[in-house]
Image (cartoon, rainbow, N blue to C red; front, side, top):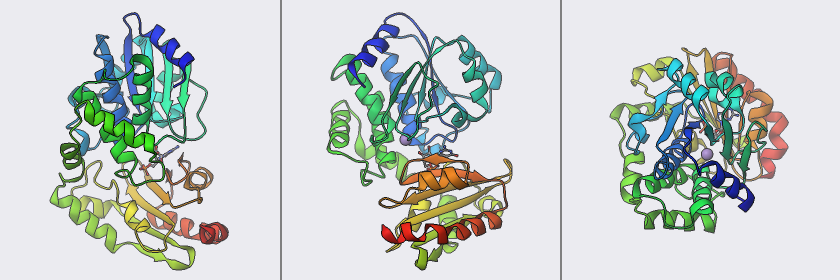
Length: 339
Ligand code: 5GP
Ligand code: MN
């Protein structure tokens, strides 16, 4: 965050504010970590700091300090609408356009509150009064750390706040393996450990608390993996029936798409997950190198994201969606072979 924006934000925070923190719909570790980490920091000097989520977040993030007090729009739409109406300052974290909040977008478009965006997705919208956007950043959590640093200098984060931010950096960098991980990312992670983030326990909570049903679902997903060597592409499908068989819960399919990318030679991986309740197929795309799944998601699947990790949706059936994906590949072949 530049010094002028930091000065502005410091000024806004110099008086008591009703503050609301909002992640994107289907929030991941980075979105939740950013909200809950920033909440912990703000609670050091502000009394009224609430996190409101568009919908439920995964069970493997429920250990985060403050998670139990998060309000969900799906469970309490009127309560969330009131918070948006009455807020003075709203931080929108880990997304670049208000429609990423689903049913909360309308209220956010008309709120009287000041809006602050902190986000690392490409093509930021212009809805916020203060925009801190940087697609080169590993994670929104890294940006929240830098924001706190710009506001307060070093050492003002509790172990609880540091744990949330560490968790977001950990998940959004694929445990520090993605190209987005920079020396500064690792320095931020180190400083979060200095503040008390327990990296062993955070890793265990996120990756080693599987329900057996989730591992059975992974088995089905791997069985369904289809590899298309001539396009250097692999994809997985999961039907509603398969999800139901394994008592599917939010977050269970997190990371499954990466197995496609782990096949030697594959540079484009996808997962298509049927959601009968919403009448859509949810899509996650991953890639290597210069192949942009952000562009692919924007052009064909009403979505977006980053160069190497993006998502979207389809209103067609699971089979039709997978068939359409396959039919797109010949056009992308030169790009896929060039990676
Ligand atoms: P995931 O595949 O893990 O859900 O998401 C990967 C990346 O794509 C994340 O940065 C996420 O914010 C973004 N993304 C996922 N789904 C959508 C979507 O429907 N629309 C947009 N614009 N971005 C998405
Ligand atoms: Mn993120």
